[in-house]
Length: 98
Image (tube, rainbow, N blue to C red):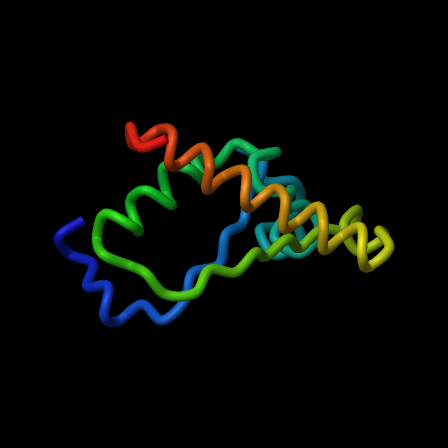
C-alpha cells in the first residue's frame, strides 16, 4: 500500500460484482454489478485498505445493473445507501474497532 499516495485520490466509488464476468467485460460492467456486499468482492477489505493509506475524502456508490435501473428511484437510492453503510460497518468490525 506504500505505492498509493492518498493525496492523489480525490474520491472513491464502491462497486461490487460477481466472481465471473457474463458476456463482454463492458456488458458485465454495464448490466451486472450488484448491491455492495451482494457480489464476490471484498468491499470491507478495500474500505479498510483505503483508510489505512490515509484516504478520508468522499465515497460514492456505483451500482451499474439492469436490475437496479428497474427499481423506483427512492428504493434504488435507499438500497444502495444501506448496502454501502453495511460495508463500512463490516470494515470497522474487521479492523478490530467496533
